Length: 221
Length: 329
Image (cartoon, one colour):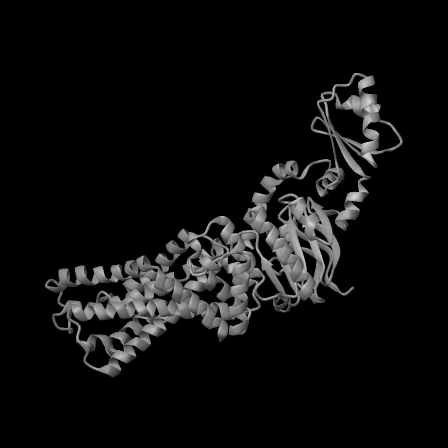
């Protein structure tokens, strides 16, 4: 447990110090939210969801922020490999599992913190919190997305040397997940063959996102 | 003497390249043992295998009786290592880097804080302890790294080129600290170096390693005695004639090397005038003559026919190739 805490602590210190990274990773979902939200608000009317597209978009953008940050936090492993720091942890008498869990905890925490920042910023553009339990459940799902995808990113990163390659591969994996997740439009508007693709990562994620949506965030308006 | 490290026929291949070629040696507890050789000779590869960073292709090695292949965690608990290349977190401060290390090795908080303070003072970084490593110069990073490696007082400490790129003053401090550490705590120290002076001053025994093989292993003074007394170096345009002329019985050895003749003999001071007389009589031009006590550099030269620096130029390519492959493992 000490070791996991030690590695987590390091991630937190690095996170707090890299102001540009924090701002950069909040900027993208925020821009999506503002441009797509305000731009499409009057054009798009979603079947069965009432008129307000922005409020539909908020949980999707929160989830997107958590998803992207957590998956790409795996890149830390590649940085550590290139800068030699990984050797320092690998020769220490700690198990590989502890290292992995520490990294995952660190990545997931940063991801969830960034998701929360988006959530807080969304209050400024029209989100109002309606039920506290719903809000807590939403955070619970953010934690799940964070842990799951950080671990996934680390798994891919540990077998790679090349940062650019990692980014390309992760984009390849993550955009279908994001695009089909129902973050931008309801899944029910997809053609039937896509929707029925059960067991694929896309559908598993869309289930999570629907859970996030129905459990709280969209009801928070 | 209790054996701390036992190495038998240890071999590592990278593709066709044999980086370490069936080496065997034993190191006693509390000994300071040096692996001396040019870059690319296989020193770091040997160290990496002993420190469980790299799997041997053949042969075996034990650290305090624990096999490096069969019980990696057991070995890791016993050892500390200072790497040749930087392994600090640049975004953390000096203190935080040390603290991270201390926590990884499960040092209790009070011991950790006390030792970090001590060690940072030793490497003269106490006043920079809260600065981020990114702002440090190369020498400061090196000092921090060594301080970190010594933090958990391991039973066996590996130092890979510990003083590379340091100024003479810091180097002296570190040598003293390493010597004290080994004497007071009985820590076994293995260091690789291509500084002759470092090996000479610090090590109880030195293995000279070249092209993956150990070519000589003994105490520094025995190694230097082994080449037969003092060294006289004559620079001349006609080295062949000098070799021809000097066939006196008191000369132990004559080698030519880059326009110089290197002669080993006892009591060089007494024989110098004879040498000069002989050469002048045959009208052989002499540009310069020097006498010096043998160094490990001369030992290396006598075993390989090359100086360490020349050897390094040739192995630079092999080294690069080796680094590339190491990173992949």
